[in-house]
Image 1: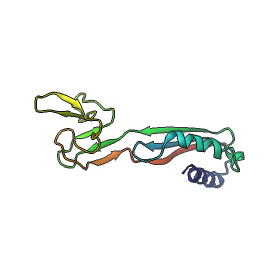
Image 2 (image 1 turned 90 degrees about the horizontal axis):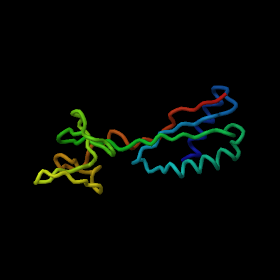
Image 3 (image 1 turned 90 degrees about the vertical axis):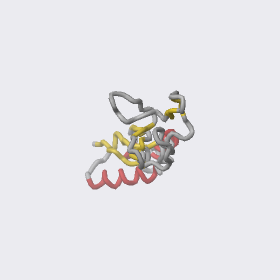
Length: 137
């Protein structure tokens, strides 16, 4: 995966007449299947190999995007780490019980609406994996 990222940056740098890349910034969603630690290690290994001249000393930054979903039935938007504040339709993954108590449903929060219980939400974020930008000279 990181090899493909570096190839895209290398091709773009060639078109832009950039001889040294100083920074590569990527966005990785929590549901993308990509592990930031593995991407960082791969960047360190690959930037020191045959592409070393272009990427030597470059820094990788990774923005991790949390999962945010919208219920297809009731429209509630909820996500990982979000809180219900000022009328925002976001929750951590809490589920209101029959007694009015709210409990954390950590296993199913992303798959089942915490308000109406319908599974299969529309994912608004968390699936991303892309190059945000790169810098060079």
